[in-house]
Length: 336
Image (cartoon, rainbow, N blue to C red; front, top):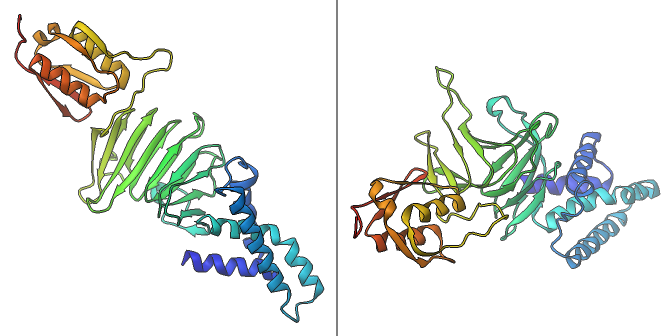
């Protein structure tokens, strides 16, 4: 349906038969994706842009040859060529747009412009405030009509990675069905798991609040807070949220210092403290005696879980993940 509407609108622009509302739609889209953020071009290369220009010229010439339209209409077609170019360019790179009415979750605006990635690869789009969204194949994003006036609201279908510009006066909201992700400035990924009927929100930097769009009789929402290397999993059937650690934690420590995981007879307490500082993940030792166990080894270049595995093997302990916390358990090591 989106492609059909796109084609119809493109033909009307070329023919000079578009309505004022449709003209306003094209102007808004052009401002959103070109004039304000020209550095984020939707073309993969200059060659692709040139091919699109040539397609446009052929289309306009073919339309201009239709008899009965007259010279005035021909001039109007050329006047509207820029608007048509925007639409045809969107099609060339796999981004289809339309003024989409959508359901109103939690009182948000129901009108916005949809951007859909119909290509087989990831596609980055720029939002009006400088934030970006990397849409995965098949994903679509509706930018709310009132974006940035008070809140920054988008509606996502499919998977996308967001890099949000900080703005304490204008919170950023992503609506994914019943699930709402609210941030002030951060980077995170939202990924629906179709077979499992779950939606996963994983945080790379900053902090997000994830909650459902509906409230119970006690006026309470189901919601959790997630920080770097944490993810929130929402079950769309059971309507439940749970916190967990991401599958591959990344280093979140400040660039002021570089973590060095080479140890020489270092007490376990110091080893785990460095891991906590580097990955921003809480690590709890169940048996305090283990804190005195010494570890020697080079863990540089290994991910967190492999590091924990090696350390625990050496001191005769075990680790397990409970929610967003790592627990280290075991008896006393040799000498304690």
